Image 1 (cartoon, each protein chain N blue to C red):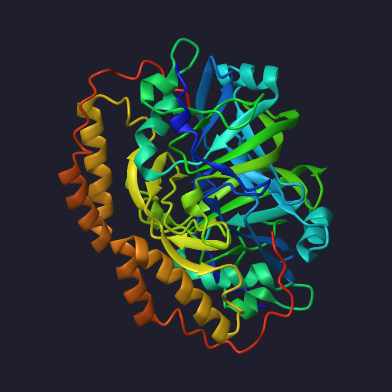
Image 2 (image 1 turned 90 degrees about the horizontal axis):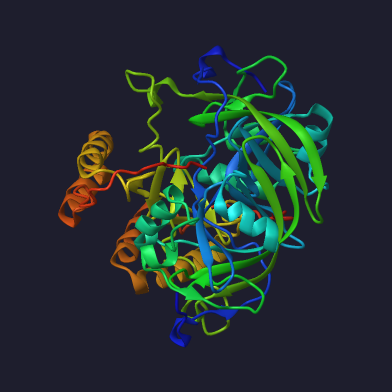
Length: 241
Length: 241
């Protein structure tokens, strides 16, 4: 492995939270009678078995008190059409404001003893706090994902979850983005040509069946040859996250 | 706040790691002489001041040993054109393979005593491990972001970072996506009309100057009236992540 001087092409801008694209989600907390919503960008999966995620909040936030007192919250994934509400819930405090009412979002009771979810969200992750870590400006809640609720329309006839056209919002450096295009499935770089073609074809069909963009993408991908991976080597062992 | 039965529209599919869209990044670790790359989806920002992130790895991974022994790693953000290499580094082990050589990616030395970054990546986050938490299948590394390196082309004439057209990859439920479209800036839902219009115009100009998609988006957004927010109320206090 050699290292050429030409390859040094970046400059330092100092420490910062420049990871991305990040999920930007609506966390619901509190009681059914007086629930609250908070927009969270500082979240991520931290464990597969058992499924766990973290969310980080400033202790000054109203939702912080609710989550500390209750030990429960729901992570609601957000679609492009909900972006204005998402932004609103990130800049306003729920201490003296009913954010469900203010945004027109609908509380949806999924489980007893848990805060309501957001009905407009396609996916809700039911979370129970395991522990809280003090880091600096934020405290990090480490939580178990006890259950996941999805719209039945997102399940195919075999019960498999299809999120290809769900149009979720992502967040990068102070801006919201959506309308992402599908590139490939996990393992496509080493998948057998036959498997890769069949699987990609199936996914592109699912996408094209629902959107105009999908149909366009399908046609463009075909031209680029993504669906015709030349790799003949089978993935000997695929390690997953 | 009322809750109608009609609003109950989701079904349980059991616990799972269904957060998204997630960043999918290349983490570089090890020495300059024998560096390694690993694809990480289980990552997120956990603190603003000081800037901190977490990455979670299975202890069986080769990179796990390297990070435990060195206490340092670099998070390299990934663009759409790097997706095949990204996928490859997630399914292959570096124990007996030079992943830089195998993918054609270029090691870039940014700081002494740190692993090399990936030259092809537009943004590199220099990370130092604070602590490691055992959770189950994965261990979670809590790390300080000690510095951020970016391509100088990403800085405007005032030194402000512009990531609007960087085309970073996101990951959702086993699939890679990219080519996201800009929706709005943090706080746009409550920004004064004049401020919102001016800022959106500037951003759309930056996007449209670099891409055909940007120009199309610009024209379509104009029609939808995103740039003409009618809200007259000034954000009294904007809380940030």
